[in-house]
Each structure stands twice: as C-alpha cells, then as structure tokens.
Image 1: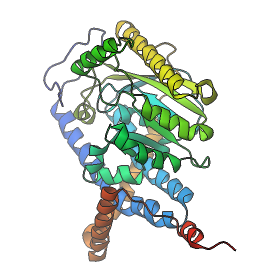
Image 2: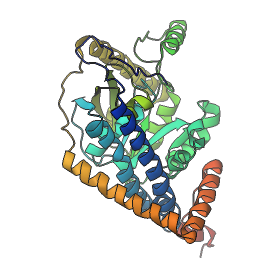
Image 3: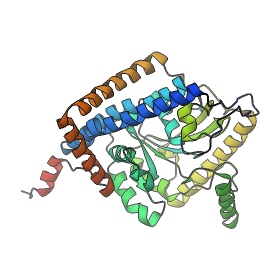
Image 4: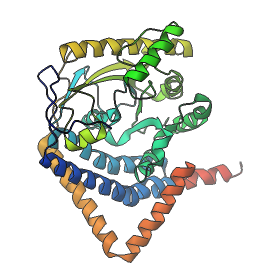
Length: 379
C-alpha cells in the first residue's frame, strides 16, 4: 500500500491530499483498534447467534438478525469516512429506490472501492444486506474472514471451472424474494493498475475488443451466472462508477484520513427486463456498459465530476453519532463480560473454534425443520 505521509500533493483541480499529522495518526490508530475489536465482538457474540443458532430454525430470520447486527457495525465505516475524516461523498446519475433486490456492478479502481458502496447502501436502508463476490484468499483473513462467511459473501478463485459450482450453490440460496439483497460484483476481477491496463489493452487488441483506458476488460461469466440465477427475484441492476480526488486511496489512507478528499459515485439503474437473456448478448451488454464507464471516467478526470450531481443528501451527523455511541457501548459491555468472566472466555474460545472450522470448510447450518422434512418419508 502506498501513502504520501509528508507534505501536500496538488491534484491539479484545487483538491489536495492531506498530510498525515500526529493528530490524524493517533486518531486513525484509535479508530482502527475500535473497528477491529468491535468486529471481533460483533462476530463472536451476535454473528454466531444470528447466523448459526437462529439459522437452525429459519434462514430468513437468521438473515434478518444478521443484517441488523452487522448493519449496525458496518455503519461505523461511513461515520469514519464522512464525519471523522471529512471525506465528501458525492452521488450523481439516478436516484434509486430504497430496499430493492439488486445486482450491483462497479469498476474496481482500488482495494477499498467495496467499502464506499456501504455509503450508498446505508442511505438506501440495505447496509446489512450487501454481499460481495470476493477472492477466496480474503476468506482466510483472521476474524474478518469469519465475518465474510457469516455475511454469505461468495468466494472465488477467479478460475471459472473451479468457481462455477460454489457460485451457483450460493446463488441458489439467495432466491427468496422476502430477503433484501444487494449482491455486489466487480466484473474486472481485480483492481486497476497501469500494468494491468496495458495487459488488458493487449488482450483486447488481440481479440477484437474495445480498447479501454480507465477500466479493464470485464469478465462476463460470473456476471451472467448471477443474472441468470437471480433474474426472477431481482428488481434491477445498479451500474456504479467510482472516481476519487485527488487520487485513489489505500486502506491506510482511509483509516488515517489522508486521502481521498472526495469520492464520486455515478449510479445508473437498469431494470432487469431491459437486459438480454442469452449469454452472448449479456456479454455484449456488459462490454458496452464498461465502455460507458470508461467514457464517464475520462470525462471525470477532465471535468472533475460526473454528470447530474446531487442525487443523494449528506448523512445526519447527529444520527451517525448516536448510532456509533450505541454500538460502542454495546461492544464495550460485551468486552467487559469477556474479560471478567471465565465462562464468557470459554464461550468465546468455543465460538472461535466453530467459526474457524465453518469458514475453512465453507459450511452453514441447515434448518432443522427442513432437515426433518427431507428425512420424512412420503405418506
């Protein structure tokens, strides 16, 4: 991860990169500690109960409980970005309805693009229901990998012959229209770099595809699988294009509030019935969509903004503050119990073993009623 720490970098458009002052350093370290501890406590106390114990009785209510608790924790990140770090998040394009079931596609400029989608999801009442298709190595992260498993993220090796069966299995479990869903996918398959762009352009030239300068050639099979399996239960596809000022941030840039000063998100809503059904036509549609993204980003780098700004308002500072205090008090109470009671320590140890095994073997409980129905012989 690269991060400018001393001085100020001029972006050329009036926006500057903020210096890493001692205050930002201390504040960032404190926020990072709070976020890591709160993630651990949220997972072992509330994630385990909602995603494992409740799931024995109902997948639907398990997801509702999980979305409630993890939506509360995820909301700490927009609070950090927008209120503590003073990053301005500017939305443009179309205003989308709240609480739709959607497949969301976005360009992948940097390692933290997926975090800024939380800012949009919170505004639409779907923060706890957002799921991602992500590379399998992230599932092996300590603590956070358990959270990704509990939240039912789809892990991929980025080899379709290996990924198809697991992806189809997970998608089959997302078809219940009672469950709100934001399934986020980055069709480029990796974050954008100059070297990757050169390789992508070479591939495009050799295969008669459009030459793109600001995005990579999208991979179509995963997107087609998501659309094919979920089409009947989706309301729309959201096409999100993300741009940053003064430059693309790293995770540490975000934590310490150095960069970005502005995040621009252009949102386009496409009704599912407007997207073709055959795999070849879907692939062509996705390629055309990324050509549009490429042009949007080219204009953004010249003009400094996307068209039709101002589609979403700012988050309420009071609401964010009260929400964060409530979550931190809850986490603090659980932390005290853990430190002061041997029984809580035993519980936490057992849950950690359970979550490690479940994440490693990619298993989730089957509802007992469903299991009994499967085992019951027909009359």
